[in-house]
Every structure is written in structure tokens, then in C-alpha cells.
Length: 290
Image (cartoon, rainbow, N blue to C red; front, side):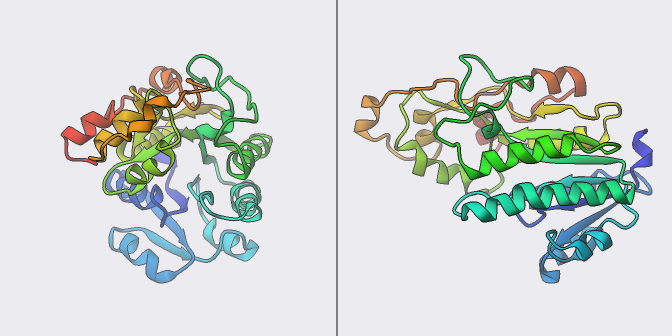
């Protein structure tokens, strides 16, 4: 399938931190004849996308009737929807696995040609003593392990098992930029981290770039790609970026897993031509893009 055959793309999770920044970029880069449809639970929350030229479908993606209407005439799906921080485990499983797989099956039945599933680097679990690659299996464990990464990992497995649906997976690290409070929120966890512990990151602009490369690239059915910048930052740097003094006791902490969450971005660079617009958070800081 060539790029011009993707005439209508459905995007879910459009009101979250990633979706609300991804959709305007997708709309801005449309080719003639291409359309974008967003799925929102509240019509009012879809107005800003409609003003940019998107079609708006209203409903809960966990509803079978909603999926049927939202997928009508769709050629490709980008599933950004996720439920993670601060939600009960059953909610995480319901959205991250059950709803994602139901969407994949409905897309398969509707004749959708491509399905981009947004996932997380947390599915890798514990570190491997080197940057994580897409060939690494999921190993439960580590500070961030729980219902969120476990449900995302299960969704990946079930979606990739669907026959006749071209599924491609994009695994994201810590996402920041453009006013996203995520960078400031990082200090809630950083207080427990060793000063030299590193955090893999990606700016919203690069997340959008990566997802669009997954969406439009031909011949990558069943492939998984890490979408990440080139330079993870340390705990000390997180404090500096937020303009907060480093706590005195931080230097007494140690890092039990120095490779936790650190990903290689070589596959997406080599195969899809991905090059981070912001290779590091410092580049984004200097560009005024935080």
C-alpha cells in the first residue's frame, strides 16, 4: 500500500497530552484527499480539532456501536488512547488492553489497512545492561512495573496476533514539551532516584514525527519501533531543567538498574529515517520548546 492510499485516518486518545499535540500536526501535514477523524467522548472537546479540519466522532471506544461508526470508511488507525497514572488497575486493563484489542478486531472486520498502536518503553521491564532494543522480550519487574505496562504488553501481543491486520507498534519513553506538565511532574519521582540515574525522553514533536513515520511507511507490518531522543538525562539535570535546587540527600542514593528504560532508537533511524528534531531536552530548552 502506498502513502496516497491512506485517505482517512482515525485517531483515538485525542484529548490526552500526546493526542492533543499529535492530531494538529497530522492535520497540518495532510496530502490532498487525506482526511483525519478523531474519536472523543464529549463533542465539545472535539471542536478545536473540527476547526482545524478534522472529522469528529463522538462516543466511548469501549462501546461496540461507537467503534462501528468511528471506523466507517477508515483506512488507518492510530490508537493513542491510554489509561495509566493514578487509575485503578481494572481501569488500566479495560482501556490499555481490552479496548485496544476490541478496536483492533473491529478495525480488522471493517477492512482497515493499517493499525498503529502506541505503547510504552515500560513494557520491557527490567534493564539489560545496555540500551533496550525491539527484539528484547518483556521481563516483568522494575520500579515502573504494574498494570499499565503489563496491560500494554498484553495489548501488543494480542494485536500483533490478529491476522490480515497490518499492525505496527510505537513504544514511547517519557514524553515532554510544549507546556506538558510532565517535565515538572518528574520531580515527584526524581526525589527517590540516584543523582546519576537516567531518564529516556522524547519531545512531543518527535513523538508525532515517529508516529507519522509508522503510519505512512510501507512494508512494516508487525514491526515494533522505539521512538526516543538521543540523550537521556540524569536526575540532577531534571532538577536543573525545572529550576529547582538539588536536594542535599540525593547524592546518598544509588541506582540499582542504570539501564532501566533506556532505549535504542537505531531501528527507527535506520529503517524509517527518523531523526529527532530535539536530540536532547537541552536542545528543546534552548529552542524555547519546553
